[in-house]
Image: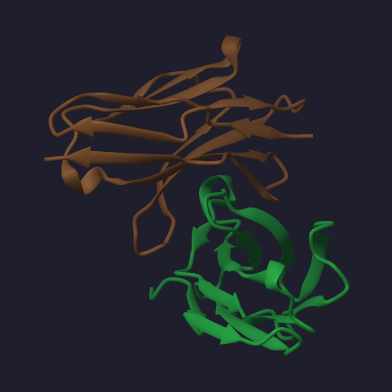
Length: 114
Length: 115
């Protein structure tokens, strides 16, 4: 069975602070994919990034960066110089190689205060 | 490309009534997924279709729930004899084998409130 754990249910920061959202996963598959989605108050899930299990290279996209560590089964997400518009619920998700269901974590609600 | 659309966006119904939701995937996406999200939780997988075939169903999909995708395009999710516990956001997603890793694109969801 697959499982995703986001231990931080809620984080509050002041604008311009850096913030890291943690994600730990469990799977028996050797090939799998990890995702981060953003869910703003409007409710629609917005895709942010996908990593496959064979690619441990960290990625940076503007103020966003992701740290994938297979040894600790973690896929953490860092926002640098946070902005109020970053306020949302962020979900980490895991998918097997067959491309079927996504297993989501419980989400982390990020509040960025001005 | 207009994205995944879902209708209605909101539905309020009384306990015991039947409701039906519709999902229109991105055109030419052959896979379509349904998820349910309750307040404060992550989405949970319900079922998915490849073309018109329903290939997997979660144990969350009780016999009061039925999903169809008759022509391999849009899909409907029906809930019979609704219960208050069915109140949730119902999310639809679609994907294509041409997209790397069958990336799933989500619609805006249908929020169901059972009173």
